[in-house]
Amino acid sequence: MRKHVLGNKSDISGLPLTENMIYFVDNLPGEISQVLDKISTSGGGVWIVGGAVRDAAMGLIPADIDLATDLMPERLIEIFPDAIKTGVAFGTVTLKSGTYLLQTTTLRVDGEYHDARRPDSVEWNLSLHQDLKRRDFTINSMAIDVARRRYYDPNGGMEDIAQKVIRCVGNSRLRINEDALRILRAYRFLSQISSANWRLDTSLSRVIEDCSYLINELSKERVWQELSKILGSKKANKTLQIMHNDGVLSVIFGWENRHNEKLFLALEDATELDATALFVLLNYHLNEIDLERICKQLKLSNNDRRKIVHINTLARTIPKHEVEDLRLHRHLAGSDWEQIAMLRYIFCQHNIDKKFSHTDSSNANAILESLRKLPPLAFNKPIFDGNWLMTVTNISQGEKLGRLIEWLFRIQIENDLQTLPEIESYLVKIQWQNSDFSQWPRLI
Image (cartoon, rainbow, N blue to C red):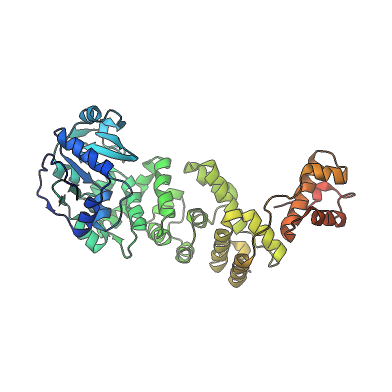
């Protein structure tokens, strides 16, 4: 157990560390301990705050560690010349130590909020008690003094962890109106906490339903940043059901119909869908153009947009239950083939798409199982090239050659061909000499 340098005392009484917190403190990386000691020896007080304390209390390993201090940002920059000026106006700098980046904020109270996102001003108020009072949720409003081996919990965060409830610090309506991003953060915590049966405080749920329109005042990048974390979490489908019932998804996506029983039931079966497939499921009622429009509105990257449209297209296509078609379909689906097949099954099971109205979901499930049993292709790229094909066919470079390459590659995939003689044997069989190349089969 490392002995740390004592910094300034807090203005509130602390409690002895819990067993989980003791483990966390005793196993702090040396690089982080060095930062704590340096602030303390420079005349400051320093505390680990926020999500790291929450995770430590729950016996989890924190992904990030944030600090609060009674030193001014300018003083921190003097002590740590390589510090990153993350948000000096709001008292935040990022301290570097080894491979660690520690976001460190001067104790403060916030001024009024007029943009539903950031305070108009901040006031340095070197009170840990007041600083913890300005935070979003009780489970995020605790602090640890590593040197004194005490923790501070003026808002009842430990009790709410025991009760598995996400509750705002103070008045829920005030907290949400200050920063509408807290709506999405509440759902993110709900989705990311690994243990089961967590819930939103009743007051918070009520306020979210009343104030969900404030999400429209947030930047689309921030909305997508939070939503993408929810979609990628282990409890995504359950959290999305709650967001759907609370009317939040309809605000994010601009849906006219707030409550859709079909979608709610489909989400119940979406336990194995990843973030992209869930995005497609949520917007099942959109055509390709409108789906792209939603992606652009939320500022998704070009790669994410292309992947969503690709998965949407293939999930609405039902391949024949024959090995050639299954090989081709899985090749076109790439690494997402299983997600696409599971999404297709959910579409059929819940009659999500009109084209599936006469399709038995058992057929979609049979296709999924057959795809799982299908051996991988020997080659995922053509085993021939254009030069070889020009030599054996006397076709010169151009669109006709490209279409013949595509046709032969399709045949290679469908039959899992592995040698040039096999390709050549099919070239003799197909009608390419005297037919319109614009009508030749394509990959998709």
